[in-house]
Amino acid sequence: MFRALVVDRDAGGATHAAVRRLEERDLPEAEVTVAVAHSTLNYKDALCMGSGGGMVRVWPHVPGIDLAGVVEASGDPRYRPGDRVVLTGWRVGENWWGGYSERARVRADWLVPLPEGMTTRQAMAVGTAGFTAMLALMALEEQGLSPDQGEVLVTGAAGGVGSVAVALLAGQGYSVAAVTGRPGTEPYLRALGAARIIPRAELAETVAKTLESEIWAGCIDNVGGAMLARVLGQMKAGASIAAVGLAGGTELPAKVSPFILRGVNLLGINSVLVPYERRVRAWARIARDLPMDKLEAMTQDCGLGDLPELGQAILRGEVRGRVVVDVT
Ligand code: NDP
Image (cartoon, rainbow, N blue to C red; front, side):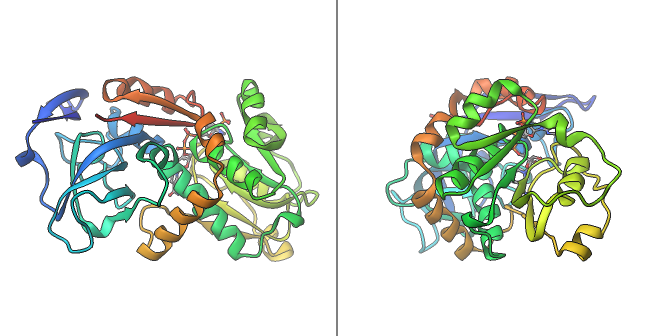
């Protein structure tokens, strides 16, 4: 028997999450059984636990899009009992039972060996949010971004992806401008390395001109919507935006002028379906380049039973930085 946070749905369509005891035979069929040590809370987890169910279609369901732990049993030659592994993406926690459980059974293809020297707790402090921030930075650098080109903007900066993005960029020598709707997070964002704080309201205003002064050498955008449209018009010629999130909306009320008159690039980031080699490369760079003291400063811990309430808080935009779930 082992403990898991199980979400069930009643006949009226209402969902209920509770910590329950499960048996090995309840787990889905796959090659690798992992003794999960830590998981994490992302915006998407909150959707999967909440009343709408996110992308969950079958109940009862065990959420948790990220997990890190130790292989307990493996029918795949790439993994042996005792190996330390991390998993993000692949719709685990959405259409497959996820990391909010002391045991998980998953496909070997979805796993990555935990980088040398990184703990399962650190890996989950990174989680999908931090992994995505690294993918965004890699995408920007592949377009030629370097610290000498000027300021890099991070929107939704005090959230999970935003916090890791700020720490990563600053750690790599970039001058970071952080957009936040929570003025009280300024000391926190400055401690992560932000050189400038921009109030959300400043970029939420719509302006008549599509093209404004060229300000940003790059951008990691977690917000989408009208803010992304506005930022497009403030990018330097040839600069790129990594489009990560939709915390401010899925619409993009933009004009094509930034693309065709300034050669601005909009780079889509999808952390869910990343080929193995790129996942390994991203995790290796996280282990090397993300300042672990900054990661610690942005992380809070919780247990399985705290998740439903914290899920509501992240949906209200009230969670700062990263939440690690101690599953054991
Ligand atoms: P969080 O909730 O931790 O952070 C989102 C942040 O966005 C908030 O903290 C807040 O920052 C800001 N924000 C919230 N609402 C609004 C609003 N209405 N207008 C402007 N800003 C707002 O979520 P995550 O960091 O985990 O994820 C960020 C986004 O990225 C989400 O949309 C998520 O779905 C997406 N995502 C996408 C991935 C991909 O593969 N493309 C992977 C991971 C996440 P502040 O308080 O500083 O203003």
